Amino acid sequence: MAKTALITGASGGFGAQFAKLFAKDGYNLVLTARSTDKLNAIKHTLEGEYGIDVTVVTKDLSHPDSADEIFAFTQQKGITVDVLVNNAGFGILGEFAATDMAKQQQLINLNILTLTKLCRLYLPQMTEQHKGHILNVASIAAFAPGPLMATYYASKAYVLSFSDALATELKGTGVTVTALCPGPVNTGFADAAGFKNNIMFSGKADGKAQQVSRYGYNAMNKGKTIALPDIMCRLGAFGVRLVPREFAKQFIYRMQSSRMDK
Image (cartoon, rainbow, N blue to C red):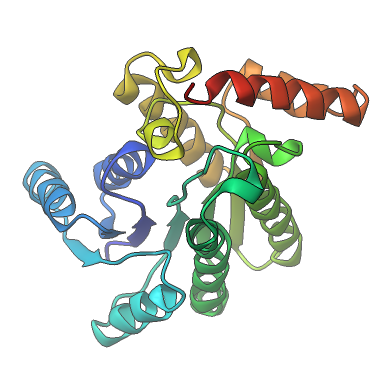
């Protein structure tokens, strides 16, 4: 019987790449995001190419009840989720006091609340079966405070800490939790966050997103808890621990300042 992977933020970027990887390995898919058209296009392609079943669930995952609604849907349809990929997320660039609080609330709901609720809802099924994987997309941003993207950096620190703790709690259950911590990748994130023509997010989106997603997918299958996709991510994650915290904060502040629209 084919396994099923649930992927959030599946309409593009990492999410679409994860969908291809799971489909290639014969997984049926539940794909969720806001864009019905994009999800249906991916559904048509993957079903045609790999002969799998793809279920589309259109949801705004920043809504506080979205996780409950997705879980209720899969329960109603009799879909057992073997792998949960919490990929959806976004950032906001700017001084916190000057940003829109409603947008900040959406960020917190999406990056933290929905991710946490989905883990809580699907974990009992996985532990009961003594098998399953959770792959949470964090960020290299999880390892330091991020002036001018304060809530985004904090939310990814939460994802990393939460995933790491869950992985320890679940040892011996057959269920693994992996936090993927990529650096900047041109997936559409930069435009949504408010960056403008930033060199860190240049290059071919599909190629780098594919590499990072493949690394995360392999790390998940190996049961790795923290997945840092390349040497720059590893240097960044561990290097920030070696320098004074004030230096790290000021460096990030200057870096973020250079990204802001002038």
